[in-house]
Length: 213
Image 1 (cartoon, rainbow, N blue to C red):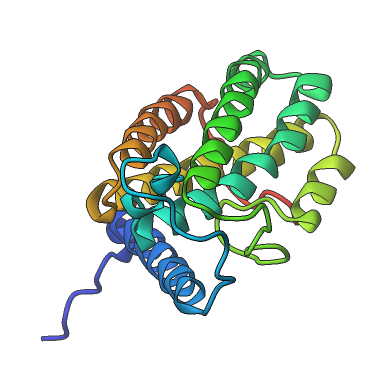
Image 2: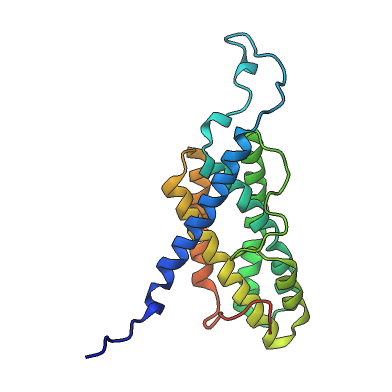
């Protein structure tokens, strides 16, 4: 008797979590490699007991923490134009309401992430510039959404938001499982909660390709 066909669709949530874990692990390995390179000697060490001796709290950050912070900043920043387009052009009240809720949260979160980046002793360079990965809004996706109109615009914008929110929730769960910094994990916990709430608030049927036709 031939084997019954399997149903891979049921595995998609687990596969999404695995993909997020792989992305974060790869970024963490890259961050660790950068940290291993010789750096400028900098100022001489401060005397014991001097507050300057500790400088920042970079020792609190592991490779996963650094990778998550460096990835989250462009993920958040590059969604802002989509939220602005939705606020200006969407005819779907639920989608417009969600964008209005997310916009100030993202602006505040970006500031928190930049503060964590500074505490970790990292510069402001974006190691993911030009990269393509799930949930990261690239120029083509943004152009595709911007070129659409009416119901097609709402469909593409909603699909973009769904992929983005789902990926960020998965990445934050990976940080909670593998990170070591209490402050970074605290923010990741907030990300899981806010992105899960955002996914629940998305209009029904918000799926499909975000940028392409």
